Image (cartoon, rainbow, N blue to C red; front, side, top):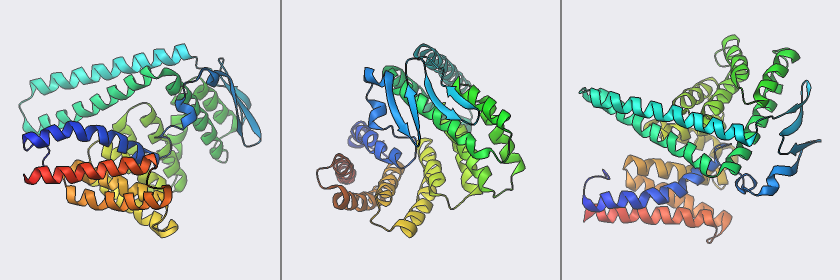
Length: 339
């Protein structure tokens, strides 16, 4: 069904957007890093000075920064909240400039294909702007998420000790600690160039570049790197999930379905249909088929996800209830379509 076909359907779009927003949280949960932990979301002042146990090291999170061990010794994440806020403001200005440029190009062109392309870009710019403004509203939570993300990126570089000197890796880690990702990106790009086409190290480097792009709300670049990661390591469910999620974000529904289907096959094969990862993928597929307008297929996947969540989590778990609301809404849309 085209959601804009009639008045009832048009009104339903407003309602479905709210439910899909909630369901999107479940979709994000299957992609590492796309769903924040409860501790990250707390925004509590105590988060400014807490200790987190990681392996044999204690990571100290303080107003001054995060201390942790790396190849070359202790590194302090030196991004202050003030700097982080300024970085968000700068990113917002860049996104606004891109948005206004796209609007100007859209106004100037009469080519139908170009208009369609620019309208799609406009929608993605709007998503990106909404994301950065959400981060500015809950600054403490997004700041803590940024610190966790940078620490993860620094840790990831340790896996390339067999390819690069300690000096090169430490320099990149110290730059990351200040929020500068350029040296880490250069390392990943070198890995991709020197590795074989299907080399798993190159796939991991592509995925890391995708994570960086997504963190910086560059969805097109993230999508490209996730796709490349899948091409180099087709049997990695994590890469397939990330590629599917970004494809869905960009409204490339056919791609998203293909990636999710491939991930679903892997998860069923290795974990069985009762696994929670499978239920989340069924939910994701329901979301994408719904966005695509094929409501009957969406219902089928939602029903599978709902039954699985009921078995694993219980009827009253928030995730179960969210999926049930999504299923009920899609069923209602089917009824209104036929009226």
